[in-house]
Image (cartoon, rainbow, N blue to C red; front, side, top):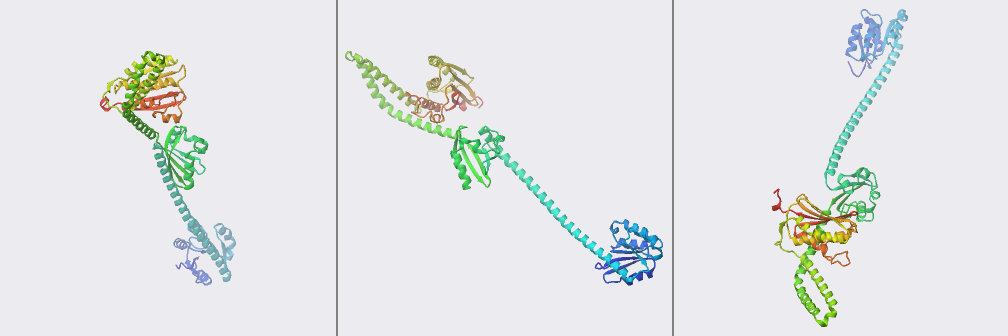
Length: 507
């Protein structure tokens, strides 16, 4: 059949009736199909789509009503308009039954040609409108389906991107959580949006208490410091900054790396307190070496004339005519002895060889000194506690260790008020033997703490500033390190002696 023309099915068992219909309906726009029975009409409906079916009511075999019912029962053809054709004397009895079966109209034979044409053209117009509407709906449905597919694809892609982003964020968070450096991120209003576990440990504050809070409100001590100025510089210039800063609340030195981004600032803190301590220790030891070398160079030249002067003062003190000046001679001799003692302290700063080092017990050396230390404590109404741990013997210079113990204990006793306790301990800590001297005096200020051990630095009115410097020098010669912890409850000096490999039982 011609797909450009509209199919109309004409069903009648009498050929002359079909010819009459064709004569009226013949048009280049219509494709008229004949069927001489209900059975033949059903076959045509199965093979082709029709815009209109003209169906005779009375036919042998399948009559028009049964044929219409079967056509209506098929999903594809249930909406095809059906117009029944019947004789005038039978119209009344068939009209109701025909409409019940879904007939759109009745044509009574004999029919008027123009009336038939007008009706058929009306039904064809309805068919065309419905077909156009169906095409429009189909096209719209197709567009909606395509749009829905695109939307589904976009949603799937976004979900996939979101999942990849979530996994990426998890990996980044895992990396930031595993690093030992403190890391935090701020938004454009200086509010915390991320804090890693290392930052929690450094600050001693959980991230839950910081997230969403303004940094300057939580850490007001940072206002006016290099932290504030450098952070603002990074944000305004949109350029990374790198600097070192001291955190007074945590008593830590940190290396800071601040990176600005469009919505805020991300910051890394690398703890360099140990490096700073090592740098200070190296500088301190360098100064000690310099002072010691200078002392060794000039001690002989100074001591010789001092010895001569002391000898003559003693001689004069025995003369009758000088007896009345005996008090002055004694004072001058005492001052010369004090000067000689200071020179001896200078000399102790110089590097010595290790010929006097012997394998011995640190506990034994301290125990021998306990009567002297206890006597000093009783004089000032203070108490001493000694706790000896099970420690390994060390290569020690007994005289120097006696000097360092007496220096630290006397400093501790002087730092405490009456009734307080000085505690001396020895114990093992890993591969180190530790000597600690703990007092119950006042906390040492940070600026003083940083200068301790520097030659000639003292907080005592009559001090030389060489006592602690000598302790540091002795510790260095024994491959030991001195560290200090101070707070409101008092101050503890730790001397950690490294056990040489040849003395370690596990090697």
